Length: 258
Image 1 (cartoon, one colour):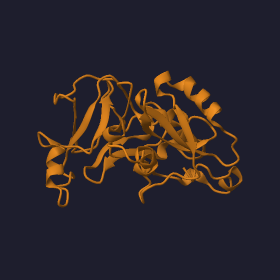
Image 2 (cartoon, rainbow, N blue to C red; image 1 turned 90 degrees about the horizontal axis):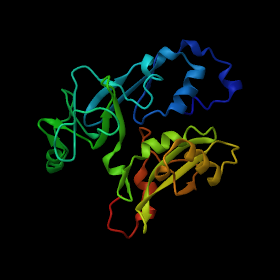
Image 3 (cartoon, rainbow, N blue to C red; image 1 turned 120 degrees about the vertical axis):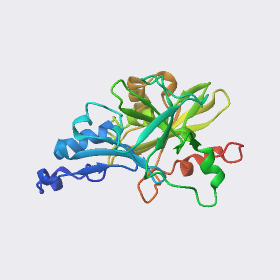
């Protein structure tokens, strides 16, 4: 993201055609960010992988599929088996966004246990497959799409809302540098959608403009009800956004864990 935001006069000093491989991992790249990258670097250089510390590298999205399969993390990597399990424990066999399930992996690189948390390891296991709690679906070509981490899903008025979809839509706005979406307490809906946004430098973007943009790309119940602004999103050393830190003040003193 920082590379793609390099000023044009600085970018122009370098021969970017020499970029051979850029691997997106740790956090998914939005389509807006991919388009930014492809404006400056060779299309054949961009790869994306999906995985985790516990389960290793599980999916691979090749350069030729980056724009052809928006939102996908690709297909299974070599020696990896993936199953999607529905809430009732059955294996999901359908395709499309309505056929979601929790993603479980079986592969040689899957870890053997959580340190001093064996019961958690067993809770996350099913039929020899292991999960870290991601919700996903397949398309009719077998490509996988991560909806979101199960614990990050927003339940608003009884409807499941996936923050990743909203984040991707908001990042299409040219004045949004990056954004994090999560649920906050709502007396009316149980949870409502809240967005924390980092503006691009010099931007005059405000809540009215952002919400208007969201309404062009999202169903009404997915449009953020509230927006706050921040200079920089808190992240781990590997670049993953620390949503729990952003969410914590809103849920302080309540029963729900954040």
